[in-house]
Length: 230
Image (cartoon, rainbow, N blue to C red; front, top):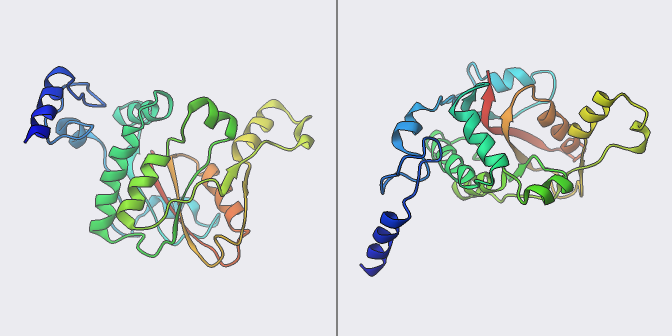
């Protein structure tokens, strides 16, 4: 009873605001108000029929399963959410999207066969500057729903090699964005990996991660993202 009174007082003097519209949240509205939540463009695929992600990676990497939560447009609320998550230090967005995605996956009984959840990594310099990987909280919530461990710091993002010194600037930038390394291939041997990311656009980053993971013996890969660009 006393704890509830304290919570009520905190809500009066320090009200929680919607992550999108910044209106005061009601007691049953975690992170995002119901109005904004229902206004977000949900894209979740309930089966493999017309699954855009599987089509996008066809002939590039073999996928067991794939899904996403939202449609990402160049302008709109999803872009605002992802931007705030990545650049404004608002990790609660990862929790919000992870809970929402986890609920849908539980209802749909998807990714039940995965062994580990693996986030697309940040380079150590960017991680140090930002202070967090925007996928960590998202992955932790998925781990809670799927009952599968989140494995960070095994798939790593690395610097380009010295042989790239004389490449044109845009080529060096692209290589730096897409170069990954796996610390120990034995960990994922004979395992089913759920690779997670925030925004799926061309798929180049996820493809690069998957090809590095494929150095592991008999690995299976599925993909899940917060959003898909259309």
